[in-house]
Image (tube, rainbow, N blue to C red; front, side, top):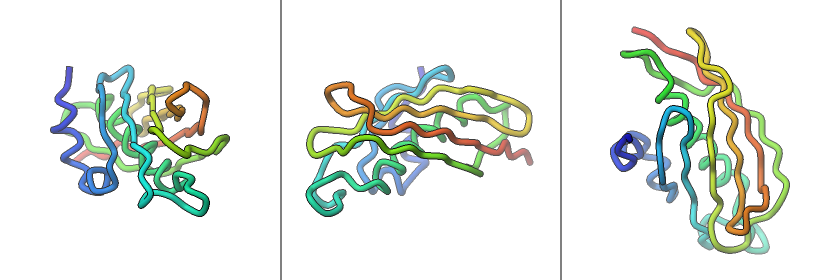
Length: 131
């Protein structure tokens, strides 16, 4: 198992926005973002940008864990479908690799609320960057 605190520390923006990693394995990465008023849009709803930060962060860790030795990654595309508002608790993310190739890693990230209801679905493509 990978040290989630160490992985998260490599992403200062994720840390600053409150993203937390719960578990990190190449086949599945989980994390969450607690609801907080400063992360909301009108009406006390967790901002879509906050949800995207969670999805991108957890997805990036999943892609990273599926890279060849010495490579790094960068998001090149991200498609999001938002389905439900988060008004309390946490948004939870589960990222799984769909494809881990030489040039790209494609990751699916499912976001849900504390009751397990789908909040969003994100598909990311991450470039494999070699030296």
